[in-house]
Image (cartoon, rainbow, N blue to C red; front, side, top):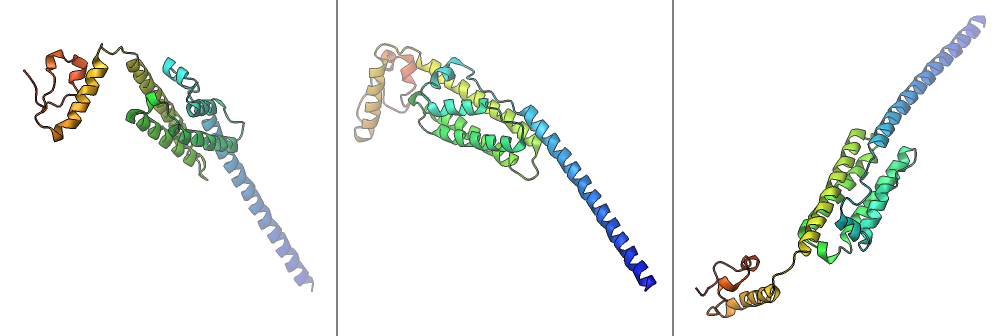
Length: 219
């Protein structure tokens, strides 16, 4: 009986010892995981630096009428609070605002080159949103995408500026009428191959480019 009690007592001590070692191991792993998450959070916090102001006059004027662009830039300006979950929520909000950029694009900027830049910007934002929501967050990739989003946003705004400047170039007198006449003539050519176009020498240089070189001309 005495030996049996000693055996049971020894077994209890062994179980308690194993349990203590498992607890210490668990605590050590938790501490390591917490430290890793802290490093990830600090890296993302440091690299979370978006261009949150219009970089040129064209964008500054446009945000007054293009509500979706204004809301997107404002979303970029609001930096998250001090938790990784706050950054995850912010990434989701930015992604939602980026998708809305396809809506209500002002007529001046409703061009293929602008649509392309918007699509690329949306892709970068959605990638950032995806990476920051992974169980193992690739912090360096998230920070890299922040820089790429800034680059795409700057490219979009520069393209807007180019279109704005082009819209300010005065049209030569009579050029609008000449363009319309040439376009009407081009549409009529398939049905009337004998139609003669105006003498190129009287057409403004900037308008001649729209004439098909295969069309008939009067020398």
